[in-house]
Length: 108
Image 1 (cartoon, rainbow, N blue to C red):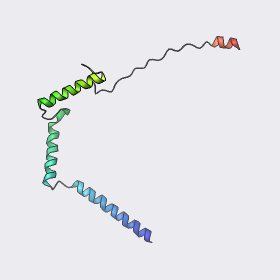
Image 2: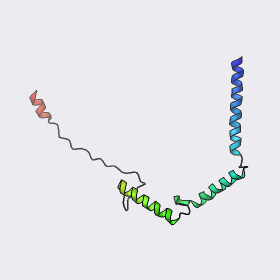
Image 3: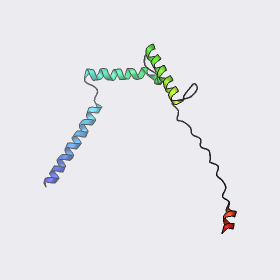
Image 4: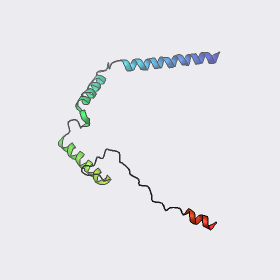
């Protein structure tokens, strides 16, 4: 009896938490700070088309270029090499010596 009432209470509490979470996610930001944050994220999304840096300064562009050159030297990249592509591997079949079955049969 006690366990059934306890389980019923837990189910009701769990469902109310789920409903509260869903309602909180569906509401708009009522806090002005939250709304400002959402507006800035939307503005940044519009400016960052194509995966480029948003409003980079010349110093940031220079630093990015030097870091990319350092990575190319360290990992074997160079001009015309796409460092973002997955490497392709080519494995040749090893050359095996043929088994001399005739000699093995003659020894028996």
